[in-house]
Image 1: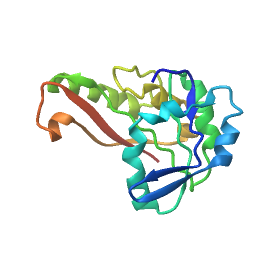
Image 2: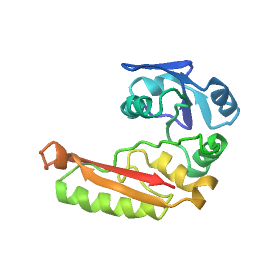
Image 3: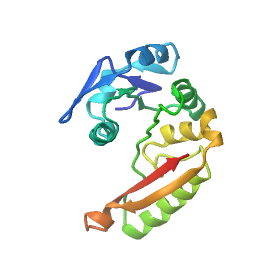
Length: 179
């Protein structure tokens, strides 16, 4: 769903097969004071990136509060402002989710995703949508004030051809840790 800015949900919980996850309503309300953050449930309805992470976070962290945001068309500085507003101490976990390249042949995808990986490690904040569908969110993270003191480490880089077998049209995936 195309939109400008960042979308917050109006709900106070998200439900997974492992149970409810409480939304940090106070944090969402604070963010709504920023001009780039809007209450937009429609942006969350078909978005699948968060639903992949929530059960893993529930199993790993137990109980926690969530600030779910979908990033639409938004410049990196505006996204960085939101990330910096949320960044707390060691109790804060920021998760940015994005696929990398989409529907390229296996070899082309590996080349493009390898370049994107090097850019992310170098904290590039000018990725394009062809390099990562979540480029706006990644670019914002790389511009966040708190990110500047961190090291970006690539954990793994693969594509669907490595797991699903069909190498004619693959989707790229990478896992990165900032510490």
